[in-house]
Length: 134
Image (tube, rainbow, N blue to C red; front, side, top):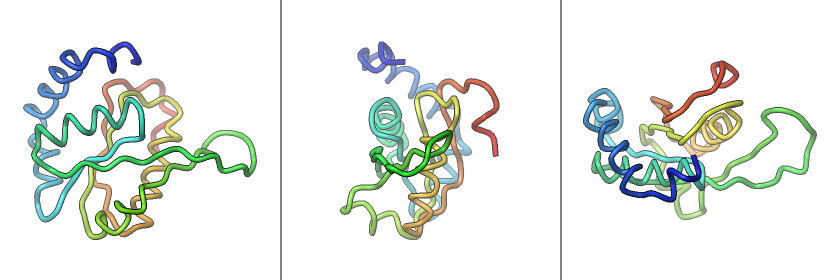
C-alpha cells in the first residue's frame, strides 16, 4: 500500500473509480452536511482524493500513543482541534487504504462519534480477514 501512496496518479485513478461507482457513498454524505475522513498516512491520502472527487469536506485523524494496556484495539486516533467542532452533526464516511485488524477504523469511529458526527459508511481499498467486522 505504501507504494500506491507514492504514485498519486494510480491512487487518483482508483479513487475516481470508487467515487464514480459509489452513488450510495455520495448520497450518504451529501444528504445534509457530509465529509470523508481517513487515518493519517494512507487512509488520509485516499480520503482527500475521494473528498475532492465527491466535493465534500476532508478530515483526518492522527494516531496518538495511549500508553495504556496492550493488545488489539489499543490505538487511539484524534481529530485536530480545529476539526473537532467542524464535524459536529455531520454524516461522515470513514475510509482507509487497508483494514486488517480494524483498530484505526474503530478508533476513528469512536473519535468522530465522540465529537458529534454520525459515521454512515466505512470503506477501504483492501480488507484483510474479518477482524475489522463488528
